[in-house]
Length: 160
Ligand code: FES
Ligand code: FES
Image (cartoon, rainbow, N blue to C red):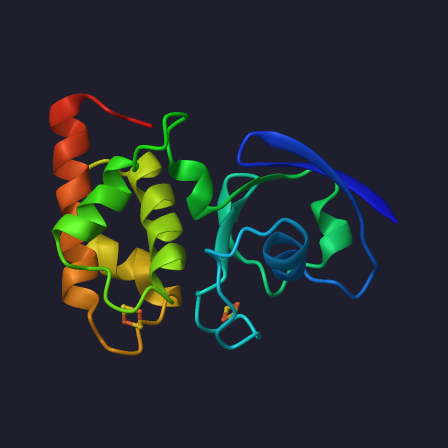
């Protein structure tokens, strides 16, 4: 079947089969390889993208379900000029980018959290990240990064 959806603010149409997953089309058909496959069964969060504004495990979403959807991946956080989003920059500055495998998912979860809660407490960040597993247990720096981004975005009046 043919599906049409918006990804990172760009409308795309693709021929997909019923067994394909959203993660497959994002990575293989569209070449957006930030979202990773970890567990493949909704447990690790490495494949997290925003789907109609909410974080989802893209390994659990079937491609046909994406028809008409709005999808945002970590690639879509870059500005038009290719500058990093403040949250991406904060991950670098806080030393939170340890493996690169879980990080795109953690960034998408953090991005969604900051939309609702621009100044989250540490505990609230930890709760939001409950579905994003960091195998090297580097959570401290990931939480630091999200709080650093929150402070910077508040100071700069950036609510994007
Ligand atoms: S690969 Fe999707 S949740 Fe682990
Ligand atoms: S930073 Fe990715 S598994 Fe720890």
